Image 1: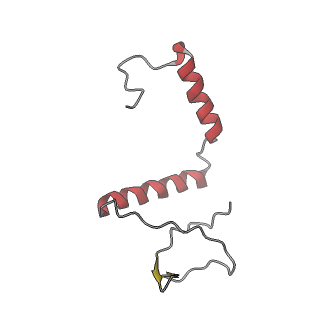
Image 2: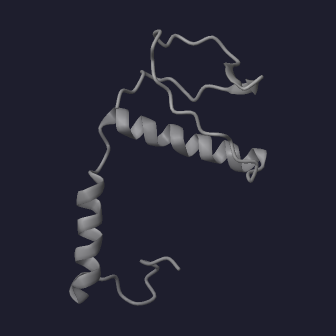
Image 3: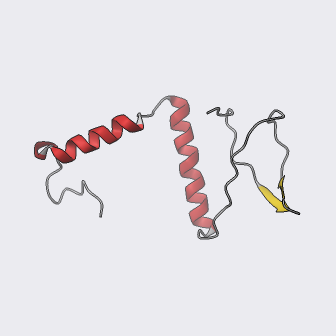
Length: 96
């Protein structure tokens, strides 16, 4: 997977069955993109919060502040299997 600097998502629309990018881009010719339709389930405030979270995650990635997903899952599984490593009841350590 290749990440392009500080690029944000591209805005585009469909016209006559073709995807048209609404703004100029610096992507080189032949760059493969994965296009995902925007869901209408979020209001403007929710979408802005999502976009902020995505940007924060990207900034963490750029700083190297990341954890391998498989290691994270293994740690969570280990903690759930070991009663001594589970958070105390009522500590808010779990979500419903």
